[in-house]
Length: 164
Image 1 (cartoon, rainbow, N blue to C red):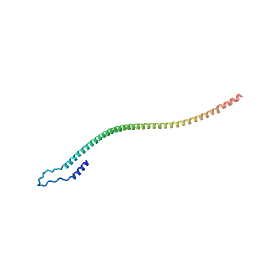
Image 2 (image 1 turned 135 degrees about the horizontal axis):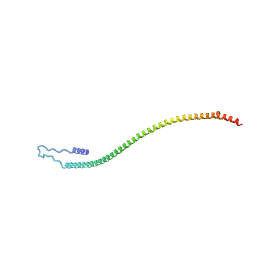
Image 3 (image 1 turned 180 degrees about the horizontal axis):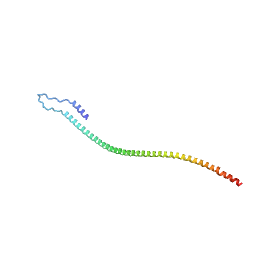
Image 4 (image 1 turned 135 degrees about the vertical axis):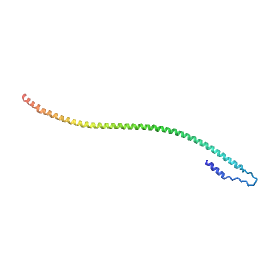
């Protein structure tokens, strides 16, 4: 469009003004335009009309392309929104699952710690029981030795001379 303005401005600046009729002369009161200038002006009007028609056709093509692009972009945007919404739902589910898993892990850890405390107590009790069992065994051995030395051997000795 700027091209047309510049062209018209340049063309009109190169046109010589029409001679003005002298006052008092018998000349017609209406100016007349020479045929060459009239044809040039008509050519410019036709060129401008052709240019405007071409610009309108190009604008229609561009508008059609723009509408198609906008439509495709709108469809893709809606698909992206749906995908984002699905991903957010999946993320929420995973977050809930992770929180539940953390709670379960904490419960298991607490149970493990309690079991370890109980095992430690049982180990202390087992060690004490083993010590008592060992002491009891030692005492039994001493009692057995005492029975042998104090009761059984003196009786064998008494029985041995009588048998001789």
